[in-house]
Amino acid sequence: MTLRIGFVGAGFNTRFHIQALTEVRDCEVVGIVSHTKASADSAAKLAKELGVGLSARAFDSVEEMTADPSVDALWLSNPNHTRIPVMEEVLAGSQRRETPLKGICLEKPLARTLQEALQVKSIADEIGVPTGYLENMLWAPSVVRAREVLWRRGAKLSGRPYLARAAEEHAGPHSAWFWQRELAGGGSLLDMMCHSIEAARWLLTEPGAPRSSLTPEKVSATVGTLKWDRPHYVQELKNRYGDAVDWSKNPADDFSRATVHWRTDDGQELLTETTSSWCFVSAGIRHTFELLGPEYAMEVNMAQCGASVFFSREVTGEAGEDLVEKQNAEQGLMPISPNEPAHYGYAGEDRYFVQSFLSGTKPKLDFSDGVEVMRLLMAAYKSAAEDRAIAPTEPELETYMPFGEVRLD
Image (cartoon, rainbow, N blue to C red; front, side):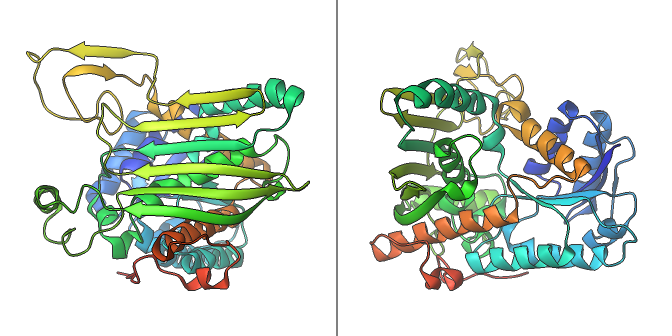
């Protein structure tokens, strides 16, 4: 049996998934919808070139692709401000099908606010098919293996871990909408701490135990705009994206830090510390994980890819990202990621959700989990704004907007 996948969105993230599918059996790409037909055609061409979508084609709309009987499942990688309209189109297309979709996956974060995330889940509940929340770091091989060994050897002999740290920092995202806070919903915290908070929680969760075995009790956070509101960098963004991106008037956060206090079923207190940034400049991404317990520690540095090259200042050429994601230099000592889609967990997560949807088993990470991640992100923004610890149970979080504005286009 083959799972025939339709992608919504044809940008950076979708292309990562298409590359990852070269390592996944029993699936093929059959459709792409994007804001332009040219970008959809380009992604379909990539799927054909890689042999994972020989019949891949561009569709005119999300509803049309959803309704088409050649599509079994959807992977949604569309911008944050289009999450609800796209889900409404998926609902409309689903109502035209004779047989239901086998599943819907949606990239992190689930939406821009907790209220929107709840709407996304509500629409998915109405559609009534299995859902998957795409959080690739839970399938990154180095993180998976280190966690397994630490829990099997360290935790078994000296007690459960009590502190997890996760950081993801780079020099900024690729597309203009990320930099427009009313479209994205926020800055680096919303864009990347969704990775770090969920990964840190997962590291602290005993293998085999449900996600609910850890309860978040309070969130303390700090956010800042450290780099991109400086005049030189304000102009750089304008040069790159036009006047629609003006951080002198509409900045978001380019640095964030959060501490979450968790409680286990038997009353133990645990901590996660997470950091996100758009103002970190090095060879590539700073992407680290730590897990600490009574007599042990785990460290994973995703930038250590196992290979590197050196180019002297005599070697010049076009700028790009042919060595590692978010590459910031073309000279000096540079890391090389031999297989980024696998290294960052995309291949693992895609393999997992393909098999879950084909077998009809409930995924271990679905839209409900995406809602809970959003709850913690909103608590972090509220904590930073009000300079106090925020309980994730505070009812005001359901209507909280970090910058007081969102816009549907």
